[in-house]
Each structure stands twice: as structure tokens, then as C-alpha cells.
Image (cartoon, rainbow, N blue to C red):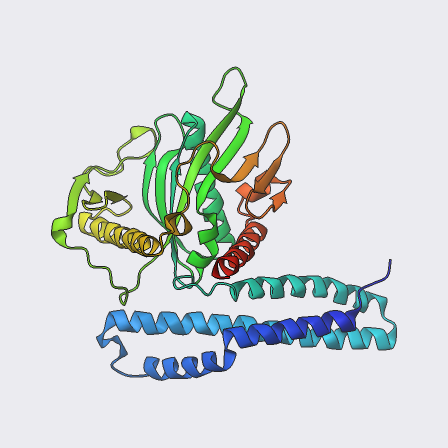
Length: 372
């Protein structure tokens, strides 16, 4: 079988990188990095801790983005040299190595290209993910926990920190709900395509007759707010309840009433946090979640597209966006993009990259169609 046309492939990669460079506006990125480095060097930077964290965080993000772009450019140039030497010397091993590197670079360029599609107002933010079990009883609660593990594993594979704010365990197995943050740039833009209803079909491990069971879980994704976001929540609009944290099987995590539940009375939005031992810390974390959800609700109402921001959270028949089928055959299929995988276990272990990429491209296409 003939090998790849290296000259044509490398030419195409360079053209794609040129387009990415224009979209990312790499020149402006370098200018902003220089400005931020000047601010970081100022002796009074940490007099204002919130501003210092914003500056250093933004600088770290931009440096990471620029390094990702420039290192990919260097790899393409190194590939060109490897191919040229291999062809001149008739070195089959070098050309075989070049072919393998070409495949890796192509995948990296495609991933970077997808990043350029994340240009929404909040796409660059960290993400708050809430998972709730739906129809299907104990199987649904177990499925909700499987989804939470899936997203946490995906984050771990990319070295993205995850902070769990609240977990409500089901009585027999699994979870009723959980809320956690994925603390990485563009986590919201990336994971927002996961919002909606997920459906699992399998032989139930909780059915002593071994029958096939269908269960549902809802995933909601909202962006983490920054200090500059305008979302005012008057104290009189919030009801604060404190309670004792609970663990799996009803066990007590703390011996004091440190867990906090906040209810936004006008909208009925409820959030809770029990990950810290301090009631004050839990209340502060719960406010972060509440404000993020209220902002998502506000933006969604303004655009009259609630499902667009929060996903369809009915978690029942007829409204799922992805199916996970373990019996009578094995497949995970996204019903919006048509993308599917025949290895459900790999997906549940966090191998979500192709699903996320397909979802981002699908959303960009839907946005363009709506704009037209």
C-alpha cells in the first residue's frame, strides 16, 4: 500500500495552522502576554489578591495556548525535515516514523482547530457540571454515578483539577445528584455540548431476574462566573438551610451541621455544598454554584433558548441526546451528531474526545444555520 503524500499533507497542515493563527490572533496574544508579564512584575500586584489571581491566571492560560500553537508549528517543521532526509537517503524506517508522526500531528491540529470554534461568550470559562438521576430507579442512580466518574476520568486524563461541591447519594446504589467544577480554561465551552439527557440500556445488575433495564440521567453544564460578571443576588432572595453532611449508605461524614443548602426563592433554584468541614466555606462554595446557575438562567431567558444553555433535563423517554447500549449489542451513539463508538467501556473510562469534538462542530454548524 502506498504511503501518504507527505508534501501535500504537510502543505495542508501548514495552511490549517495559518488559519488557526488568524483565528487565535497570535500576535495580539503575544502583546497581551507582554502586558500581563509587566503587571506580574509590579511590586504591588498582590495588594489586590483578586486582581492578582485574575492576572496570573490569564497569563498562565495565554502562555499555555501560545506554547501549544508554537510547539505544533515546530513539530510540523521537524516532520518536513524528517521526510526530506528519509526520502533523500531512501530510509524506510525514517519514513515509517514520519508517517506515524504525521498521524499524531494531524490529530493535534484537528484538536486545536476545534478550540478555535469555542468563541462563545463564556466558552473560555471553567465549568460547573450537575448530574441528576432520572427515570429508572436504582439503575438510574447507578448510571448517574457512572457518568460522574466518566467526566472526572476525562478531566484527570487532561490534568484538569476537579472540585466536588455536593454529592447526594441514593439509598441502594449510585447517586441522586452531584455538582462538581472542572477547573480548566475552555472547560465550559468543551463540556457544554454534554448538556442534556443521557440514556443507558443494559442488563440490570440490580434485577435478580437479569432483565434488560433502560435508565436516564440528566447533565447540566454552566460556566463559572468571574468577579466582573454582573449577577446581583440580594440576601432576602436566598433561604439558607444547614444540615449534617451524609455519605454513601446514609453514613455521617461530619458530626456538625456544616453542609449548606441555598434556595433562590424567586426562581426556585436550589444548590448545596458539603465538601468542606466549615459551614462558612460551604456557603461560599454554594454561592459560586448558585450565581453560575442564575447567570445561565438569565442568559437563556434573554435568548429564549433555555435548553441551549442548560440542556434538556427531563431525563426520560424520547428526549435523550446520547444512548449508551450495553445489551443486546454494545455501542455509544450521539443522536445529534451521529458519532458513535463500539467500545462503551472506553467511553465510561473517560475517552470522550471524539464525542466532544463532534459535538462542538455540530453546535457550530447549528449556530451558523440559525444565524442564516
